[in-house]
Structures are given as structure tokens and as C-alpha cells.
Length: 218
Image (cartoon, rainbow, N blue to C red; front, side):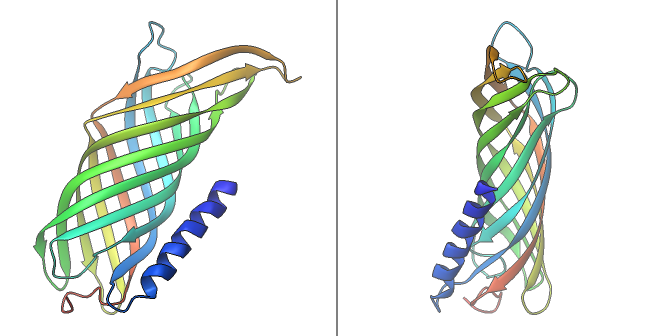
């Protein structure tokens, strides 16, 4: 809950700052993401190997949704669940920051097609290890990068639907966690040190355009 409060505070502060400027055009809204990863444990043991399902929901801010200009920067801040597809490994919950640096390859009053690099950073304050009978206490961080391609479809007035697809060439997660008995005593500690590559992510967004974020206004 504390992360959700910080998330909303950051987005609202950014929105108020941008809204105060008459010459700045931008868009903001909500986004949902679903992805797939395959982890490879860097230790000799393979307790964290395997396929992963990633889901997130959050807020998105874009500097150029509909304008007839080349570049846009899109920031998505979302609550993310990163879960193992089997009983091996751990499940992570936290906040993910996704940065898209887009360059328009086609733009019109109705549609914009863009592509570019994506960077993602994750901070996970909850580590769960299901089906063990033990409690867990720990955290992890994550990082990844790769290309992203997106399309914006503009409706009249201020609404835009957007979809993007990202393919991460490389990434990693690092952290640790304790395994605890029900009485709070610690029975062991494990490190998270995994790499992933060839991962895919689909993001769907509903955006509202503010200021001069319109194809006919530059």
C-alpha cells in the first residue's frame, strides 16, 4: 500500500507541473501489461530456473501521443507481480518503472506508429515461495532492456488507445530472502541471482491528451 501511495503522489506531482505550462503537451492514463520470462539461475543449483508470468497495472505518462513530431518519451509506473509458472522458484511483488524512447515511423491525425529502445527497472519488496510451508522475508531488484514497438489510435477530442510490444534482449534479477518458521525463527537464506533473455511483454494503455497534444498543433 505504501508503494501505491507513492506512485500516485509522483504521477500527480508530474501532472500538475506539466499542466501549469501552456506550451507543454502531454498525455497520461492507465496501463496493463502481461509478459513472459525464462529465468536462468547463475548458481550451480537450479532452484530459480524456469518460466515466469508477469502482470502489472499502473499509470502511464507520455510526452507526445498525437502531435506531428518525431520523438516521445513514455514512463509507466506499475505494481507488478512476477510469478513462477511452476512450483520451483519464488514469486516477486513490487514496483516496476518502464521507460520507452519512441521515434515515430508513421503519423497521421488518427494513428501513430513508433518504435525505439525500452529500459525497465523493478524494485520488489515482497518475496513469496509457495508450497513450502515457510514464510519468506526479503527483496530483489531487476533490470532489462530491448526494443519496443507501439501504435497509438486517436479518438476525437482527447482519448487515445495504445498498444506496445517489447522484446528484452537481456536482463537480470538480484536479491535475497530468508525462510522463516511460523514462530519467526529463520531456518535458511537464499540468494536470487538470475539472468533472462528473449522475454516478451504486451502493454495496453488508455490515455488522455492534455494541452496541445494534437496532430494539428505543434
